[in-house]
Image (cartoon, rainbow, N blue to C red):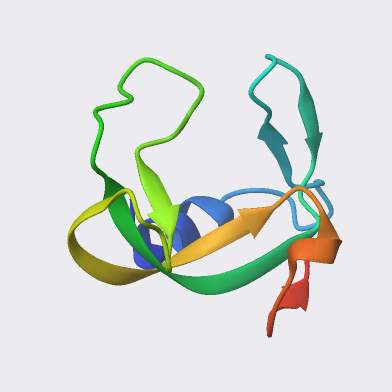
Length: 85
């Protein structure tokens, strides 16, 4: 999914719906912040686990070319240079 895909989907929804994310323990919580980060794939294949395939730079377990990505945070304290959701 990219920003254009996300915007297209969001435009079909009521604007007052809250934004929520699945957390690793299977629950759901409110999104608190949105930011852009430099990320890279983790060396280990974490497919089908709650660990996640990518890491934010700098990270010693990185592999491959880094790229910028939108990160939606559950905790506003992690927001760096972004806007509250």
